[in-house]
Length: 300
Image (cartoon, rainbow, N blue to C red; front, side, top):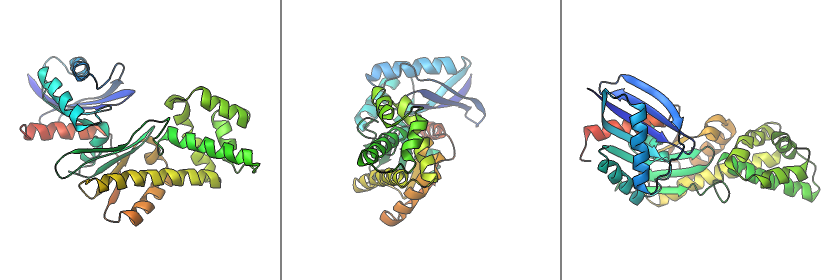
């Protein structure tokens, strides 16, 4: 049988998969729905991973190491229990929070992973390899620098200005158009009636479009998002995050230069010892790197 290593990036909606031979021949790059995934109870999560591997890895291939980054592995205790549950099914694996994939995906040994996508979270490890997580509290109450959080804040700001009697500076009209409604009252209704990532997140582009046309309100919302990302970094640094790299990924930060520039300038002032890298490859590459590192040091 041909021996292979597997990298898995298990997100809330889809799971990215890479399968490679030990000599680096890439056999599979794919994504599959994450339907049914939950990290807890860990036994069920391990069974989900086992079933997935059975579906995506050919029978003639022997899996010798798996690297997993998964949504829901939010504490060191849960991650440890999950690895043990995987081992009980015969799977040799390293399992971390999905945001922790950013550092190895960028080719670094340590640093801070920062996601600004649908949500927002920061992840790192201290010098003792203890997991550190900050943010990621969800789009209703947190995730201020995620797409849904940006839309939530932009809607608040636009409606407050509307009630002040201020002239629309472009933010309100862009949100109205983005949600395909007629006016401020209907904007409030469509946002409140469906408070989901699927409803809010895709409209973040309307906020950046408003900023590009000069909306001071939109610019302030983006500035707040950048401040939140720097706050996540600050929290991790204070808690002992190791390394000098900040690796950022996610659909918002990667695709919105305004947020990139705002984050970079703030980091330069508040954390000049840290360098910012925008991840230009899929985070699942970090999972594959973890699988290979485990294979090289199985007792680590």
